[in-house]
Image 1 (cartoon, rainbow over the protein chains, first blue to last red):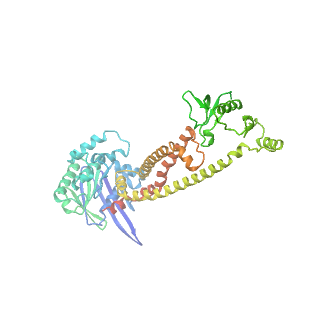
Image 2 (image 1 turned 60 degrees about the vertical axis):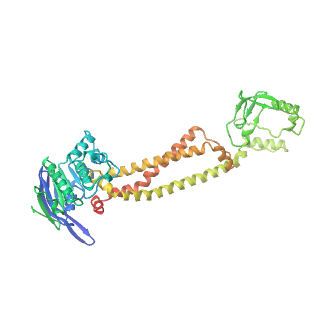
Image 3 (image 1 turned 180 degrees about the vertical axis):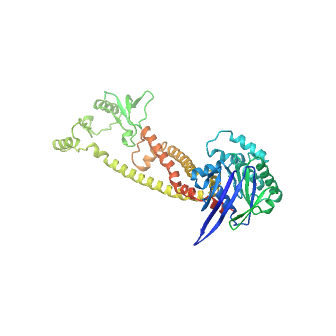
Length: 222
Length: 257
Protein backbone atom coordinates (compact mmCIF):
# COMPACT_ATOMS: atom_id res chain seq x y z
CA UNK A 1 0.00 0.00 0.00
CA UNK A 2 1.27 3.44 -0.93
CA UNK A 3 -1.05 5.57 1.17
CA UNK A 4 -3.49 4.94 3.98
CA UNK A 5 -5.72 7.72 5.21
CA UNK A 6 -7.53 6.81 8.40
CA UNK A 7 -10.31 8.77 10.15
CA UNK A 8 -8.80 12.00 8.89
CA UNK A 9 -10.41 15.23 10.10
CA UNK A 10 -9.50 18.86 9.54
CA UNK A 11 -11.40 21.52 11.40
CA UNK A 12 -11.12 25.22 10.53
CA UNK A 13 -12.37 28.22 12.43
CA UNK A 14 -14.08 31.04 10.60
CA UNK A 15 -14.77 33.83 13.07
CA UNK A 16 -16.45 32.25 16.08
CA UNK A 17 -17.76 29.25 14.20
CA UNK A 18 -15.86 26.16 13.26
CA UNK A 19 -16.46 23.78 10.40
CA UNK A 20 -15.03 20.53 9.11
CA UNK A 21 -13.26 20.81 5.76
CA UNK A 22 -12.51 17.08 5.98
CA UNK A 23 -14.43 14.77 8.25
CA UNK A 24 -13.42 11.22 9.13
CA UNK A 25 -12.03 10.53 5.68
CA UNK A 26 -10.63 7.11 4.95
CA UNK A 27 -8.78 6.06 1.82
CA UNK A 28 -6.24 3.48 0.72
CA UNK A 29 -4.11 3.85 -2.40
CA UNK A 30 -2.02 1.04 -3.88
CA UNK A 31 0.95 1.04 -6.27
CA UNK A 32 -0.26 1.67 -9.81
CA UNK A 33 -3.64 2.86 -8.55
CA UNK A 34 -5.50 5.64 -10.37
CA UNK A 35 -7.85 7.38 -7.94
CA UNK A 36 -10.13 10.29 -8.72
CA UNK A 37 -11.98 12.28 -6.08
CA UNK A 38 -14.81 14.37 -7.44
CA UNK A 39 -16.75 17.05 -5.67
CA UNK A 40 -18.01 20.59 -5.94
CA UNK A 41 -15.87 23.61 -5.11
CA UNK A 42 -15.52 23.95 -1.34
CA UNK A 43 -16.25 20.28 -0.70
CA UNK A 44 -12.82 19.77 0.92
CA UNK A 45 -10.96 18.06 -1.95
CA UNK A 46 -7.98 20.43 -1.98
CA UNK A 47 -7.79 20.39 1.82
CA UNK A 48 -7.61 16.60 1.71
CA UNK A 49 -4.85 16.80 -0.88
CA UNK A 50 -2.94 19.40 1.20
CA UNK A 51 -3.22 17.13 4.26
CA UNK A 52 -1.86 14.18 2.30
CA UNK A 53 0.97 16.38 0.96
CA UNK A 54 1.94 17.41 4.50
CA UNK A 55 1.14 21.06 3.82
CA UNK A 56 -1.54 21.02 6.53
CA UNK A 57 -1.67 19.30 9.89
CA UNK A 58 -4.83 17.26 10.53
CA UNK A 59 -7.02 17.95 13.53
CA UNK A 60 -7.24 14.22 14.07
CA UNK A 61 -6.69 10.96 12.25
CA UNK A 62 -3.61 9.67 10.47
CA UNK A 63 -1.96 9.64 7.05
CA UNK A 64 0.40 6.74 6.65
CA UNK A 65 2.96 6.41 3.91
CA UNK A 66 5.20 3.36 4.07
CA UNK A 67 4.00 2.71 7.60
CA UNK A 68 4.90 6.21 8.87
CA UNK A 69 2.34 8.71 10.08
CA UNK A 70 3.25 11.95 8.30
CA UNK A 71 1.10 14.10 10.58
CA UNK A 72 3.81 13.82 13.24
CA UNK A 73 6.55 15.08 10.87
CA UNK A 74 8.36 18.35 11.58
CA UNK A 75 8.92 20.85 8.75
CA UNK A 76 12.20 19.34 7.53
CA UNK A 77 10.79 15.80 7.54
CA UNK A 78 7.55 16.87 5.85
CA UNK A 79 9.49 18.80 3.19
CA UNK A 80 11.73 15.83 2.46
CA UNK A 81 8.69 13.56 2.26
CA UNK A 82 6.97 15.98 -0.12
CA UNK A 83 10.10 16.18 -2.23
CA UNK A 84 10.90 12.47 -2.42
CA UNK A 85 7.73 10.44 -1.91
CA UNK A 86 5.13 12.75 -3.38
CA UNK A 87 4.81 14.39 -6.77
CA UNK A 88 2.42 17.32 -6.60
CA UNK A 89 0.73 18.98 -9.56
CA UNK A 90 -0.83 22.17 -8.19
CA UNK A 91 -3.92 23.79 -9.59
CA UNK A 92 -3.37 26.42 -12.30
CA UNK A 93 -0.06 27.73 -13.59
CA UNK A 94 2.70 26.74 -11.19
CA UNK A 95 5.89 26.95 -13.26
CA UNK A 96 8.63 29.44 -12.37
CA UNK A 97 8.58 32.05 -15.10
CA UNK A 98 12.31 32.83 -15.12
CA UNK A 99 13.39 29.20 -15.53
CA UNK A 100 13.33 27.20 -18.75
CA UNK A 101 11.09 24.14 -19.04
CA UNK A 102 14.11 21.88 -18.41
CA UNK A 103 15.15 23.85 -15.30
CA UNK A 104 11.59 23.85 -13.99
CA UNK A 105 11.41 20.07 -14.33
CA UNK A 106 14.73 19.37 -12.63
CA UNK A 107 14.38 21.98 -9.87
CA UNK A 108 13.02 19.60 -7.14
CA UNK A 109 15.95 17.26 -7.79
CA UNK A 110 18.34 19.76 -6.18
CA UNK A 111 16.44 20.40 -2.94
CA UNK A 112 18.14 17.47 -1.25
CA UNK A 113 21.43 15.71 -1.98
CA UNK A 114 20.98 13.11 -4.73
CA UNK A 115 23.05 11.06 -7.12
CA UNK A 116 22.39 11.14 -10.85
CA UNK A 117 22.07 13.39 -13.87
CA UNK A 118 19.08 15.65 -13.31
CA UNK A 119 19.17 17.17 -16.81
CA UNK A 120 19.20 13.77 -18.50
CA UNK A 121 16.34 12.56 -16.33
CA UNK A 122 14.34 15.76 -16.92
CA UNK A 123 14.78 15.40 -20.70
CA UNK A 124 13.63 11.80 -20.51
CA UNK A 125 10.51 12.86 -18.56
CA UNK A 126 9.78 15.61 -21.08
CA UNK A 127 9.93 12.95 -23.76
CA UNK A 128 7.57 10.76 -21.70
CA UNK A 129 5.01 13.59 -21.47
CA UNK A 130 5.44 14.36 -25.16
CA UNK A 131 7.18 17.74 -25.17
CA UNK A 132 10.96 17.15 -25.52
CA UNK A 133 11.14 19.94 -28.12
CA UNK A 134 10.09 22.52 -25.50
CA UNK A 135 12.99 21.86 -23.11
CA UNK A 136 14.65 25.22 -23.62
CA UNK A 137 11.50 27.33 -23.89
CA UNK A 138 10.18 29.54 -21.10
CA UNK A 139 6.70 29.05 -19.56
CA UNK A 140 5.37 32.21 -21.23
CA UNK A 141 5.96 30.52 -24.61
CA UNK A 142 3.78 27.48 -23.73
CA UNK A 143 0.08 26.74 -23.98
CA UNK A 144 -2.00 25.73 -20.93
CA UNK A 145 -1.84 22.03 -21.83
CA UNK A 146 1.94 22.18 -22.35
CA UNK A 147 2.42 23.89 -18.99
CA UNK A 148 0.40 21.15 -17.33
CA UNK A 149 2.60 18.51 -18.95
CA UNK A 150 5.70 20.31 -17.66
CA UNK A 151 4.19 20.38 -14.14
CA UNK A 152 3.53 16.62 -14.41
CA UNK A 153 7.09 15.94 -15.56
CA UNK A 154 8.39 18.06 -12.67
CA UNK A 155 6.25 16.08 -10.22
CA UNK A 156 7.86 12.85 -11.48
CA UNK A 157 11.52 13.95 -11.33
CA UNK A 158 12.23 12.26 -7.97
CA UNK A 159 10.41 9.00 -8.80
CA UNK A 160 7.57 9.55 -6.31
CA UNK A 161 5.45 6.72 -4.97
CA UNK A 162 2.32 8.78 -5.51
CA UNK A 163 1.35 11.66 -7.76
CA UNK A 164 -1.16 14.16 -6.34
CA UNK A 165 -2.95 16.38 -8.83
CA UNK A 166 -5.21 19.26 -7.81
CA UNK A 167 -7.78 20.09 -10.50
CA UNK A 168 -5.26 19.24 -13.23
CA UNK A 169 -7.71 19.95 -16.04
CA UNK A 170 -9.55 22.96 -14.63
CA UNK A 171 -8.43 25.35 -17.39
CA UNK A 172 -7.97 22.92 -20.28
CA UNK A 173 -10.15 22.18 -23.31
CA UNK A 174 -11.79 18.79 -23.83
CA UNK A 175 -9.10 17.38 -26.10
CA UNK A 176 -6.22 18.49 -23.86
CA UNK A 177 -8.10 17.15 -20.83
CA UNK A 178 -8.30 13.75 -22.50
CA UNK A 179 -4.58 13.85 -23.29
CA UNK A 180 -3.67 14.70 -19.69
CA UNK A 181 -5.92 11.92 -18.40
CA UNK A 182 -4.25 9.48 -20.79
CA UNK A 183 -0.89 10.60 -19.44
CA UNK A 184 -2.02 10.02 -15.84
CA UNK A 185 -3.19 6.55 -16.77
CA UNK A 186 0.20 5.78 -18.34
CA UNK A 187 1.93 7.03 -15.20
CA UNK A 188 -0.21 4.80 -13.01
CA UNK A 189 0.47 1.83 -15.27
CA UNK A 190 4.19 2.44 -14.81
CA UNK A 191 3.70 1.86 -11.04
CA UNK A 192 3.32 5.37 -9.64
CA UNK A 193 -0.06 5.76 -7.94
CA UNK A 194 -2.10 8.75 -9.11
CA UNK A 195 -4.54 10.60 -6.86
CA UNK A 196 -6.35 13.51 -8.45
CA UNK A 197 -9.15 15.73 -7.28
CA UNK A 198 -11.48 17.45 -9.69
CA UNK A 199 -14.92 18.93 -10.04
CA UNK A 200 -14.88 18.18 -13.77
CA UNK A 201 -16.78 15.00 -14.54
CA UNK A 202 -15.25 14.91 -18.01
CA UNK A 203 -11.86 14.53 -16.37
CA UNK A 204 -12.76 11.16 -14.89
CA UNK A 205 -10.85 8.37 -16.57
CA UNK A 206 -12.97 5.30 -17.22
CA UNK A 207 -10.44 3.05 -15.49
CA UNK A 208 -10.04 5.21 -12.40
CA UNK A 209 -11.33 4.37 -8.95
CA UNK A 210 -13.68 7.25 -8.23
CA UNK A 211 -14.58 8.70 -4.83
CA UNK A 212 -16.99 11.50 -4.06
CA UNK A 213 -16.45 14.28 -1.59
CA UNK A 214 -19.23 16.39 -0.21
CA UNK A 215 -19.05 18.80 2.75
CA UNK A 216 -15.80 17.21 3.89
CA UNK A 217 -17.15 13.68 3.82
CA UNK A 218 -15.46 11.19 1.51
CA UNK A 219 -17.69 8.44 0.27
CA UNK A 220 -16.73 5.21 -1.43
CA UNK A 221 -16.56 4.61 -5.14
CA UNK A 222 -19.07 6.85 -6.90
CA UNK B 1 70.95 68.84 4.97
CA UNK B 2 74.06 69.31 2.79
CA UNK B 3 75.05 72.64 1.28
CA UNK B 4 73.61 73.28 -2.18
CA UNK B 5 70.96 70.55 -1.84
CA UNK B 6 67.21 71.20 -1.76
CA UNK B 7 64.11 69.46 -0.50
CA UNK B 8 61.09 70.24 -2.69
CA UNK B 9 57.36 70.29 -1.96
CA UNK B 10 55.12 67.93 -3.89
CA UNK B 11 53.93 70.53 -6.43
CA UNK B 12 57.44 71.62 -7.49
CA UNK B 13 58.22 70.38 -11.00
CA UNK B 14 61.76 69.02 -11.13
CA UNK B 15 64.12 68.60 -14.06
CA UNK B 16 64.49 65.11 -15.45
CA UNK B 17 67.83 64.71 -13.63
CA UNK B 18 66.05 65.43 -10.33
CA UNK B 19 67.40 68.97 -10.02
CA UNK B 20 65.75 72.35 -9.71
CA UNK B 21 66.96 75.39 -11.62
CA UNK B 22 66.65 78.69 -9.72
CA UNK B 23 68.14 81.98 -10.94
CA UNK B 24 70.34 80.24 -13.52
CA UNK B 25 71.75 77.83 -10.97
CA UNK B 26 70.92 74.17 -10.83
CA UNK B 27 70.42 72.53 -7.42
CA UNK B 28 70.14 68.80 -6.79
CA UNK B 29 66.95 67.80 -4.99
CA UNK B 30 67.58 65.31 -2.22
CA UNK B 31 63.89 64.47 -1.74
CA UNK B 32 60.41 65.54 -2.65
CA UNK B 33 57.75 65.68 0.08
CA UNK B 34 54.35 63.98 0.11
CA UNK B 35 51.34 66.11 -0.76
CA UNK B 36 49.84 68.16 2.09
CA UNK B 37 47.43 70.36 0.08
CA UNK B 38 48.90 73.37 1.88
CA UNK B 39 51.38 76.05 0.83
CA UNK B 40 54.14 73.65 1.83
CA UNK B 41 53.51 71.77 -1.44
CA UNK B 42 54.93 74.68 -3.45
CA UNK B 43 57.84 75.43 -1.05
CA UNK B 44 61.52 74.61 -1.28
CA UNK B 45 63.65 73.90 1.78
CA UNK B 46 67.42 74.44 2.13
CA UNK B 47 70.03 75.24 4.73
CA UNK B 48 71.23 78.78 5.43
CA UNK B 49 74.40 78.54 3.34
CA UNK B 50 72.41 77.40 0.30
CA UNK B 51 69.98 80.23 0.99
CA UNK B 52 72.83 82.74 0.87
CA UNK B 53 74.08 81.27 -2.39
CA UNK B 54 70.57 81.42 -3.88
CA UNK B 55 70.20 85.04 -2.75
CA UNK B 56 73.48 85.90 -4.47
CA UNK B 57 72.37 84.20 -7.69
CA UNK B 58 69.13 86.14 -7.62
CA UNK B 59 70.93 89.44 -7.16
CA UNK B 60 73.18 88.63 -10.12
CA UNK B 61 70.15 88.46 -12.37
CA UNK B 62 68.75 91.64 -10.87
CA UNK B 63 66.23 90.18 -8.43
CA UNK B 64 66.39 91.13 -4.80
CA UNK B 65 63.71 89.15 -3.03
CA UNK B 66 64.70 90.08 0.51
CA UNK B 67 64.37 93.50 2.06
CA UNK B 68 67.70 93.26 3.89
CA UNK B 69 71.04 93.05 2.10
CA UNK B 70 72.09 90.03 4.09
CA UNK B 71 69.86 86.93 4.08
CA UNK B 72 70.89 86.23 7.66
CA UNK B 73 69.19 89.43 8.67
CA UNK B 74 65.92 88.53 6.95
CA UNK B 75 65.08 85.42 8.82
CA UNK B 76 61.34 85.29 9.38
CA UNK B 77 61.10 82.07 11.27
CA UNK B 78 63.25 79.52 12.95
CA UNK B 79 62.24 75.93 13.43
CA UNK B 80 63.20 74.63 16.84
CA UNK B 81 63.22 70.88 17.09
CA UNK B 82 62.82 69.81 20.71
CA UNK B 83 64.71 66.78 21.92
CA UNK B 84 62.73 63.77 23.04
CA UNK B 85 61.66 63.98 26.64
CA UNK B 86 61.38 67.79 26.67
CA UNK B 87 58.03 69.55 26.73
CA UNK B 88 57.60 71.88 23.68
CA UNK B 89 55.36 74.21 25.74
CA UNK B 90 58.07 74.65 28.41
CA UNK B 91 60.68 75.36 25.74
CA UNK B 92 58.33 77.88 24.10
CA UNK B 93 57.75 79.60 27.44
CA UNK B 94 61.52 79.87 28.05
CA UNK B 95 62.09 81.40 24.59
CA UNK B 96 59.30 83.92 25.17
CA UNK B 97 60.87 84.96 28.46
CA UNK B 98 64.38 85.32 27.07
CA UNK B 99 63.52 86.87 23.65
CA UNK B 100 60.30 88.84 24.24
CA UNK B 101 60.19 90.29 20.68
CA UNK B 102 59.78 86.79 19.16
CA UNK B 103 56.43 85.13 18.63
CA UNK B 104 56.58 81.49 19.59
CA UNK B 105 54.15 79.03 18.07
CA UNK B 106 54.14 75.43 19.15
CA UNK B 107 53.63 73.15 16.16
CA UNK B 108 50.55 71.50 17.65
CA UNK B 109 48.75 74.83 17.82
CA UNK B 110 49.79 75.54 14.22
CA UNK B 111 47.75 72.64 12.96
CA UNK B 112 44.98 72.75 15.54
CA UNK B 113 42.76 74.93 13.36
CA UNK B 114 43.08 72.62 10.38
CA UNK B 115 42.67 69.56 12.58
CA UNK B 116 39.54 71.03 14.18
CA UNK B 117 38.04 71.83 10.78
CA UNK B 118 38.86 68.41 9.43
CA UNK B 119 37.58 66.76 12.60
CA UNK B 120 34.23 68.55 12.33
CA UNK B 121 33.94 67.73 8.65
CA UNK B 122 34.73 64.07 9.26
CA UNK B 123 32.17 63.98 12.10
CA UNK B 124 29.49 65.42 9.83
CA UNK B 125 30.36 63.03 7.02
CA UNK B 126 30.27 60.06 9.40
CA UNK B 127 26.89 61.11 10.80
CA UNK B 128 25.55 61.60 7.28
CA UNK B 129 26.87 58.19 6.21
CA UNK B 130 25.24 56.46 9.22
CA UNK B 131 21.98 58.29 8.53
CA UNK B 132 22.02 57.35 4.84
CA UNK B 133 22.84 53.75 5.70
CA UNK B 134 19.92 53.57 8.15
CA UNK B 135 17.58 55.14 5.56
CA UNK B 136 18.81 52.63 2.95
CA UNK B 137 17.99 49.75 5.34
CA UNK B 138 14.49 51.16 5.98
CA UNK B 139 13.73 51.84 2.30
CA UNK B 140 15.02 48.44 1.22
CA UNK B 141 12.99 46.75 3.98
CA UNK B 142 9.88 48.20 2.34
CA UNK B 143 11.12 47.29 -1.16
CA UNK B 144 11.94 43.69 -0.21
CA UNK B 145 8.64 43.35 1.62
CA UNK B 146 6.72 44.38 -1.51
CA UNK B 147 8.77 42.28 -3.94
CA UNK B 148 8.64 39.15 -1.77
CA UNK B 149 4.90 39.61 -1.41
CA UNK B 150 4.63 39.74 -5.21
CA UNK B 151 6.52 36.44 -5.38
CA UNK B 152 4.37 34.65 -2.78
CA UNK B 153 3.06 32.11 -5.26
CA UNK B 154 6.59 31.28 -6.43
CA UNK B 155 7.60 30.52 -2.81
CA UNK B 156 4.43 28.49 -2.30
CA UNK B 157 5.35 26.36 -5.35
CA UNK B 158 8.84 25.84 -3.92
CA UNK B 159 7.27 24.67 -0.63
CA UNK B 160 5.03 22.22 -2.53
CA UNK B 161 8.08 20.86 -4.33
CA UNK B 162 9.82 20.19 -1.01
CA UNK B 163 11.63 23.37 0.05
CA UNK B 164 11.86 23.74 3.82
CA UNK B 165 11.00 27.02 5.55
CA UNK B 166 14.71 27.37 6.35
CA UNK B 167 15.55 27.06 2.65
CA UNK B 168 13.10 29.85 1.76
CA UNK B 169 14.71 32.14 4.34
CA UNK B 170 18.14 31.25 3.04
CA UNK B 171 17.01 31.89 -0.56
CA UNK B 172 15.67 35.36 0.24
CA UNK B 173 18.76 36.33 2.27
CA UNK B 174 21.14 35.03 -0.39
CA UNK B 175 19.34 36.91 -3.16
CA UNK B 176 19.42 40.13 -1.15
CA UNK B 177 23.10 39.61 -0.27
CA UNK B 178 24.00 39.17 -3.96
CA UNK B 179 22.01 42.28 -4.92
CA UNK B 180 23.49 44.48 -2.21
CA UNK B 181 27.02 43.16 -2.79
CA UNK B 182 26.68 44.03 -6.49
CA UNK B 183 25.47 47.49 -5.49
CA UNK B 184 28.36 47.79 -3.05
CA UNK B 185 30.94 46.87 -5.69
CA UNK B 186 29.42 49.34 -8.17
CA UNK B 187 29.23 52.06 -5.50
CA UNK B 188 32.79 51.70 -4.21
CA UNK B 189 34.11 51.50 -7.78
CA UNK B 190 32.25 54.71 -8.65
CA UNK B 191 33.55 56.38 -5.48
CA UNK B 192 37.10 55.34 -6.35
CA UNK B 193 36.77 56.64 -9.91
CA UNK B 194 35.42 59.98 -8.66
CA UNK B 195 37.49 60.58 -5.53
CA UNK B 196 40.98 59.41 -6.45
CA UNK B 197 41.55 61.46 -9.65
CA UNK B 198 39.75 64.53 -8.27
CA UNK B 199 41.32 64.62 -4.80
CA UNK B 200 43.14 67.92 -5.48
CA UNK B 201 39.94 69.52 -6.79
CA UNK B 202 38.01 68.29 -3.74
CA UNK B 203 40.68 69.78 -1.44
CA UNK B 204 40.45 73.07 -3.30
CA UNK B 205 36.65 73.18 -3.11
CA UNK B 206 36.64 72.30 0.58
CA UNK B 207 39.44 74.82 1.18
CA UNK B 208 41.05 72.27 3.41
CA UNK B 209 44.16 70.18 2.93
CA UNK B 210 43.20 66.89 1.30
CA UNK B 211 45.60 64.19 2.27
CA UNK B 212 45.25 61.01 0.29
CA UNK B 213 45.40 58.16 2.81
CA UNK B 214 48.00 55.48 2.16
CA UNK B 215 47.08 52.33 0.19
CA UNK B 216 46.39 50.25 3.30
CA UNK B 217 43.91 52.79 4.67
CA UNK B 218 42.22 53.17 1.25
CA UNK B 219 41.86 49.39 0.95
CA UNK B 220 40.53 49.23 4.51
CA UNK B 221 37.92 51.90 3.76
CA UNK B 222 36.93 50.08 0.56
CA UNK B 223 36.59 46.78 2.42
CA UNK B 224 34.49 48.39 5.17
CA UNK B 225 32.28 50.12 2.58
CA UNK B 226 31.77 46.83 0.75
CA UNK B 227 30.99 45.02 4.00
CA UNK B 228 28.46 47.61 5.14
CA UNK B 229 26.78 47.90 1.73
CA UNK B 230 26.62 44.10 1.41
CA UNK B 231 25.03 43.85 4.85
CA UNK B 232 22.22 46.25 3.90
CA UNK B 233 20.36 43.70 1.73
CA UNK B 234 20.25 40.79 4.20
CA UNK B 235 19.39 43.16 7.08
CA UNK B 236 16.59 44.74 5.08
CA UNK B 237 15.16 41.40 3.94
CA UNK B 238 15.08 39.63 7.33
CA UNK B 239 11.49 40.73 7.96
CA UNK B 240 10.28 39.68 4.48
CA UNK B 241 12.14 36.36 4.72
CA UNK B 242 10.64 35.57 8.12
CA UNK B 243 7.16 36.49 6.88
CA UNK B 244 7.36 34.37 3.71
CA UNK B 245 8.63 31.37 5.67
CA UNK B 246 5.60 31.60 8.00
CA UNK B 247 3.06 31.91 5.18
CA UNK B 248 0.82 28.87 4.83
CA UNK B 249 1.33 27.38 1.38
CA UNK B 250 -2.23 26.15 0.95
CA UNK B 251 -3.57 29.66 1.60
CA UNK B 252 -1.20 31.22 -0.93
CA UNK B 253 -2.15 28.71 -3.60
CA UNK B 254 -5.81 29.35 -2.85
CA UNK B 255 -5.24 33.13 -3.28
CA UNK B 256 -3.90 32.38 -6.74
CA UNK B 257 -6.98 30.41 -7.80
